[in-house]
Image (tube, rainbow, N blue to C red; front, top):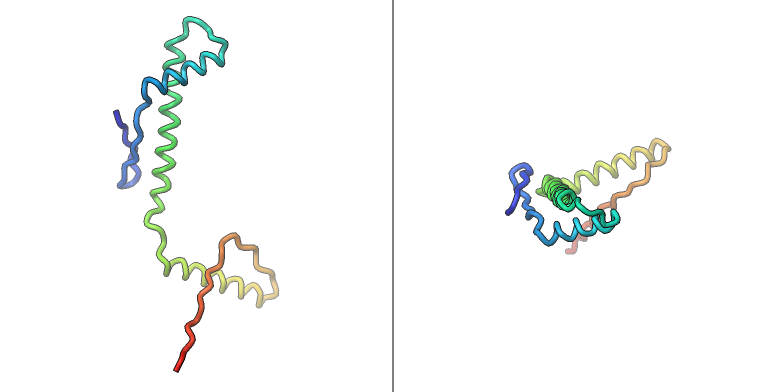
Length: 115
């Protein structure tokens, strides 16, 4: 069975946990807790829920990444970089030091005119 999580106009899908995945998770929890008898159903339901929550979070994280799509165009990136350089130049001309930038600067080369 598949479940869908909607993110804007996209759907991120994840599969339901399989019997073997639930059984392994429940067994490991049972072992971790000292092999307590008579709580099989509790371990099973907790394992099933744990796997579902983990997959739901993973699907939501994937959906959040798709919200940034489409990526900014090259023109938008250049415009942003130019504004940042202008801000730094203004800071330098005022005698203050510009704050450190964590983003790489975009360097463009001028074409040489040949006759």
